[in-house]
Length: 233
Image (tube, rainbow, N blue to C red; front, side, top):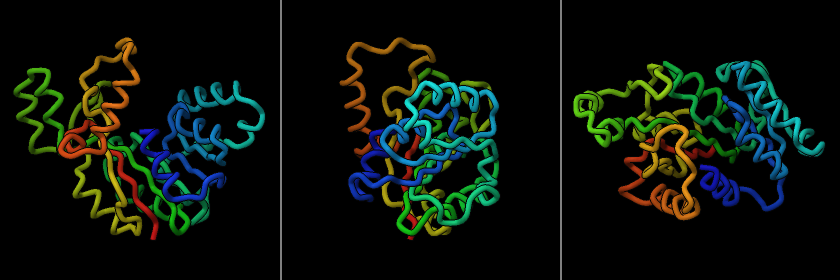
């Protein structure tokens, strides 16, 4: 996903430009910190105290120049209008958040308002068109059959959450003025790997295969996650 995001940033903005980045639901700050290291001015929004503490701990170990480029705001992603003016950011990330939001439309509209004209919106969501794949590959036939006609599922944390279908999100992005520019699949081959599985010796080959599949039909359509990139008109 990081490679996909970098590809979109490189194709949209001048080389060396310091971008204003907003990461909504930043978690422990993995992507926010990575982009701050790349020279961008990054603001992360997170409401979970444990994740915020982890992000601060990671940031504390960075050189002063990187620490100065990253800001952490405690808050809900649906309240971006409370903290920031419209059009304040060149890039807005919302990765792995929509599945926890029962009604995502207000959140999406708020994210689009944060974008400057020509700005990039990056979403990572659970693929609602491929929910049957994981239980099917594990031989859970009842679970696979139940997944075909729903966008609701139980994740690995045991939480009841929701997925998004590509066609539905495409229409929503057009409606909020940040139409879909391109999309990728994420975790095409590796979604069934167990949590805590050791890093394979051939990691570079694995990543190359995932990256190729994530941009190639029909593989990307059955990925566990979708990475959608919209552009503010």
